Length: 341
Image (tube, rainbow, N blue to C red; front, side, top):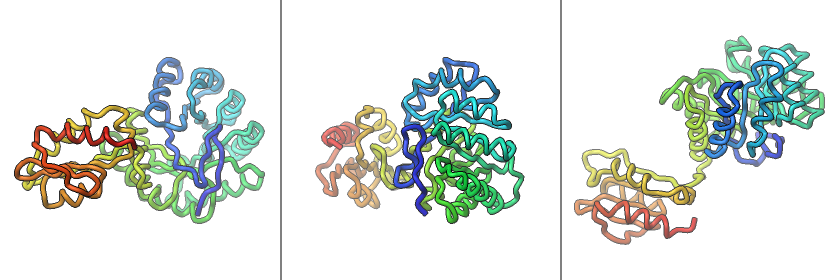
């Protein structure tokens, strides 16, 4: 089911719009310089929506005054009482996130009313930690009940999220909800952990849903650097959509057949490229031998295939010339810079 379109500030979400990348600030709410620095870096990395925690009443106005210079919609994450949510909307935040699992029904409805008055957006965030459910269907049904209740008020500028630290649970809850409602979904796996494990859990859960056509905004949430979350989210979005945001470099995993040092060449090649080079929507192949190499490279805009005597440069499906191994990186960079897109 195609979701309905909503607006978060001036940003259209849902409907036929691309999946939007969301990030959450991790700096202390009391450290203004760290908050704005982190926010600027996240926007530069590709975050299209920024969320920050409003842990206590009375903080929303100050937080908004710090972050309002960021050129993206701002979300206030509010819990337990309606006070912080109302203050955030009065301060200027474009959207609030509230959790029916830790707020009273009346507080949620008052927050909805305020969002409607302010022409702001709202997210109903459900998770297994606060909703005390045992199955994905239970969580989805709670979300669907609230979804219908809010729609009956006439307010439709809201999204829903259903998260768990279990990938399978998260995927099944979101799939179930998407069958019965056209409300946009914010997706992600919560408390996924750190390092490669956290990224892989997020990739598995978010990737499944995006490939199903489920999800309108996305946040990769791992313990660690928020910039890595944004980078991972953008890569996931590009992989699932089949439309790279910029330069895509494919390379073989290497084996005993490799004629060239694929790993070393790949690393040096990336370092040789400029930020403008990475913006070009081109596909480049670095392949180690003649078994799979020519075929894979022919599917790319340009590429290199290792041979007994060095390598072959392949451009748009055709072998153009032989290249010595020491000249591979130079040749590839030249090919990239010839192309305008």
